[in-house]
Amino acid sequence: MAATGKMAGADAAVLFRILVGLFGLAALMACTPTYTNHGFIPTDEDVEEIMVGVDTRETVTSIIGKPAAAGLLTEEAWYYVQSRFEHFAYTESEEIDREVLQITFDESGVVENIERFGLEEGQVVALSRRVTTSNTKGVGFLQQLLGNVGKINLDNIVGG
Image (cartoon, rainbow, N blue to C red; front, side, top):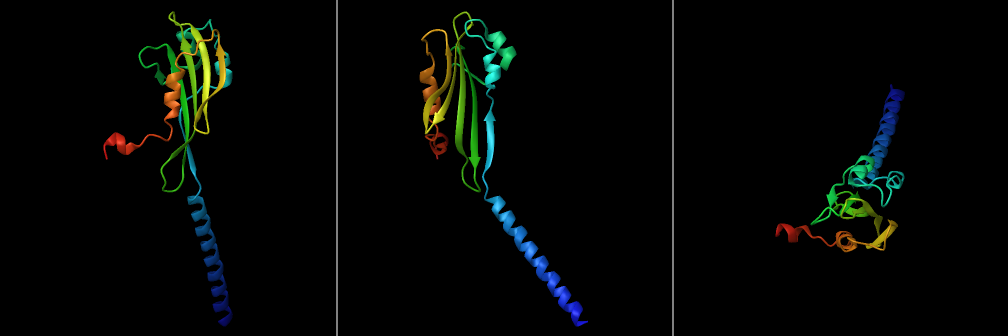
């Protein structure tokens, strides 16, 4: 009888250690960041299929699809935007990466310029550029778009 009681105590101790280990593992897993991606940006291979000076809005749509954003006043440029956010425990999500593909068109709707922008230490950086002329229309808009990362305060917008 006494041997059975010692065996039950040993089993309880092992079970307790397993439960403590599982609880510790769960606590560590809860402290790991989660990542979410928002938006869509075509791959380099898909973008290479677009011929500057040859393709039109229609052919670009058939190759990589329509963008989520276009130029503010006219559709002289299309913007494909993808952002990556890191969320850690109960803190606010933080944007850790953003990439923008800008395709500009001339007046007749032919591709004039293809540029890919990213963020490097909070500054807008051209990652790649395919241009037929020295035209860089729309760069001011992109600098404004990417330059506001981390500067937007929701309290100012909501009025809180």
